[in-house]
Figure 1 (tube, rainbow, N blue to C red):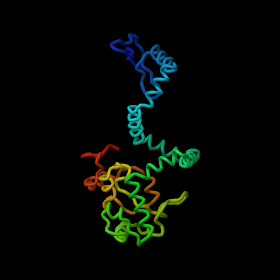
Figure 2 (tube, rainbow, N blue to C red):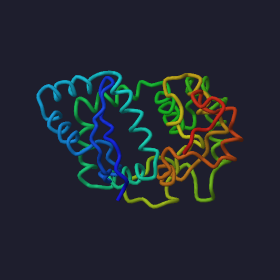
Figure 3 (cartoon, helix red, strand yellow):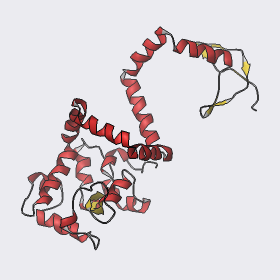
Figure 4 (cartoon, rainbow, N blue to C red):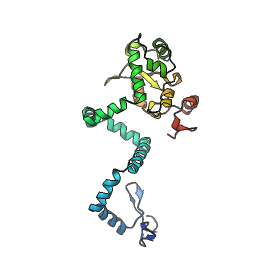
Length: 247
């Protein structure tokens, strides 16, 4: 049991004079006394508090703060584990399918597909489907001089089991070493998909290679080892500046 401490609840110079013994609740030690905590619970249920809360949730400051907190949690071990377990649940899979077909889901997809990064990725996929097709967009925004040049480079990064017949989308139930995709050593998600400079860096030759499709999906947004990152210093995302973000 902890030592008695003064209640931390205060307002405009006033502070509660009650003394209480902190207890561990929902992952943290309580800072307020039982009386103040009871008052806060009653207030949170009032019409005034609920109205204030609803207005705050709609504010830009809340959205920015919440997005930052969510991003921070998703990068933690527990956050990644939660996402992995959630994505494997059948009801969540069905929800995602329904959302994709909804007006809101279609609008979100349309917005995503309009991003410079998405447009270039789509152009690359289309170009690789046909060996005689040269996309002006791809040739302008990458280091490749032709379709043959891109194919030759990707072939140089192949593993023994890879060929052009098993390049494409991974279907449900497929095992490792059955399908390959274009992988990025520094993942696409690390770059600003609306920043043209970041788009160019993301698709540099040194950042792309032929990768096992299942491995590509499992790694998600995970960064490569530090020695690999240091060798790719010239193509770091603009927002990184001079330091690698903490894992």
